[in-house]
Image (cartoon, rainbow over all chains, first blue to last red):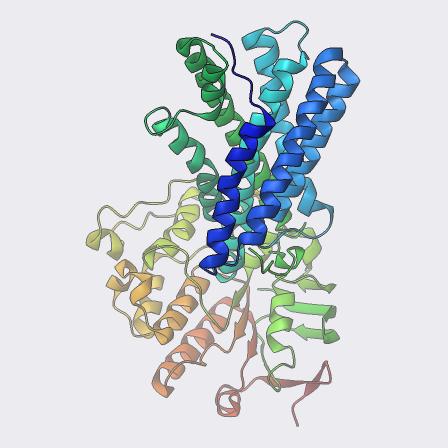
Length: 269
Length: 247
C-alpha cells in the first residue's frame, strides 16, 4: 500500500469546510469568524513552512541545524505557556519557569527515547528527533501551562490561608503544600485521561498518521504506546519542575508570601 | 520573658518607626483607617517586605528562622483564616511538636473522644532544632481547655467543622490557636472587632492573664477608646506615618 498524495485541489476542498464554518459563525453572530480564518491561515502557513524546513533538515542530518530547530520549538512553547497564564510571574520568570521546565523534561525524555529505547543511529536523526520532540513539547506544554496557572490562581485566592499557616509557625513548604499538590494534579489529569481512553474513542494522532502512511497497525500501536509513556513521564517531570520552581518563587528569603511577584490578571484568560 | 524592640521599621506609607516594649508590657496602637496599623503588625511579624530590625529580648529577628520568629512573635490578624476541616486539626500539629519534647501526651483530648478517626498529623515537622531551646513549654491540654472555657467554648468545639463557625467564634478560637503556640510576644489586630461586649471582655481577660503569666509583650491595635481605657497600658497613635503618644 502506498501513500495517496494530496493535491492542492484536495486541500482546497477541505478548506471550503472551514470557510463554511466561518460563514456560519458570521450568520449566527458568534463573533469568532475572524479568529477561525486567521488561525486556519496560520496553520496553513506554519505547516507548509515546517514541511519545507524538515525537508531541508532531513536531507542534511546536521546537528547544529537540528539544534537550532529544537531551540525555536522550545522558545515558541515557552512563549505559549506564558500566554496561557492568568497571573504570570513578573520579569524573566514568566517566561523562564515554563521554558526551563520544558527543557528539563521534554529534552531529557526525548534523548532517553532516542538513545536507549529506540536506538536511532545517529541519535539526532531528524526523522525521529523532530517529531518526537515536537510531541513531547506539545504535551508537556499543556501540562505545565495548566499546572502553573492553577498554582498561581490558587495561591492568589488562598492568600489568607497560606499566611495563616505561616503565622502558625509553618515553613513556606507547609504553607503552600496543598496548593502545590492540587496544581500538580490538575496538570497531570489530561494525560492520564488520554492514556485511559486511548484507542477506545479515537485513534491518537500519531497512530492515525502511521496507519495512513501504510504501517502495519500493530507497529503503529506500539509506537503510539511508546509515545504515550514518554509523554506521561515528560509531563509529570515538567509539571513537577515548574510547580516546584514556581511555588518557591512565590516566597522570598524570609519566607513571606510574595504575590506582588505575579502580574495583574490577564483579562483575555 | 523578653521584651520587643522595633528599630527603624519602614514599610510602604509607614515609618521609620522605633518602639520598645518591655517584657510583659502592653501597648495600644490606634489611628485612622488606612494609617498603617495592620501594616505595622505585619511588618513586625515579617509577612511583608520592609526595612528595619526587630529584637525579641537580645535576639535580632534576622538571626532567627522566619517560621520560628512567627511562632514566637504571634500575630492575630483581623480576619482569622482556617486551613483544615475541623478546629482541632489546627491545634494537634502544635501539640505533636510538643510530644517530641517528652511532654505528657494529651491522653483524653476531647476531640479524640468525639472523632476517634481524627488523624493525628503524622508528618514530622521540618524545623531547625535550635528553635526548641529558647522556646517556653507549650501549654498542656488543661490550659487549653481552660482558655476555651473562659472564651465560652466547651471542649467539644475542637471537633467542630470550621465552616460552621460564626465570625465571632472564628475570632475567639483564633486567639486560642495563637496562644497554643505560646508566643513570647503578641501582636493583636483588632482582636475584639467582631465581638459583643461580653465576648470582648472574655478576650481581654484571656489576653491579660496570658500577658501576666508569660511576661509577654503585647502590641495591640484597637480602635476602641473604651477598651484602651479599661485595660490601661501605654496608648500610641499613628499620625503622619509616625507613632505618637495619644493625647
